[in-house]
Length: 93
Ligand SMILES: [Zn+2]
Image 1 (spheres, rainbow, N blue to C red):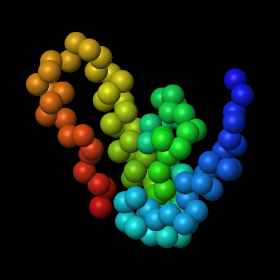
Image 2: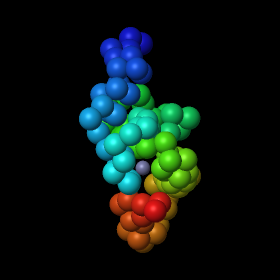
Image 3: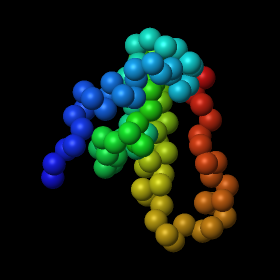
Image 4: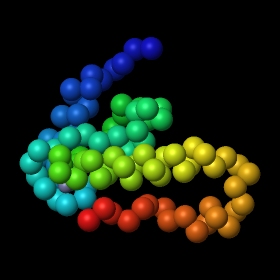
């Protein structure tokens, strides 16, 4: 499968002129995978957000935990539990 955009280009697109999505820092940014790569998250703009290096470890943990919750709970999850889940987990301040 052809990759139209290299990781270097994508990562530059996400981080250049951006601020950390969590603390607003403008330096030391990395392109964070909202859905982790190991869970099939694509190297695509819609799956990336700018996060600074100091927030990144915490953000990765939240993303992984959230993604695994989604993965481990297929259709048979009772609708209640699903509705109670927040759309976004609280920010890891
Ligand atoms: Zn940050």
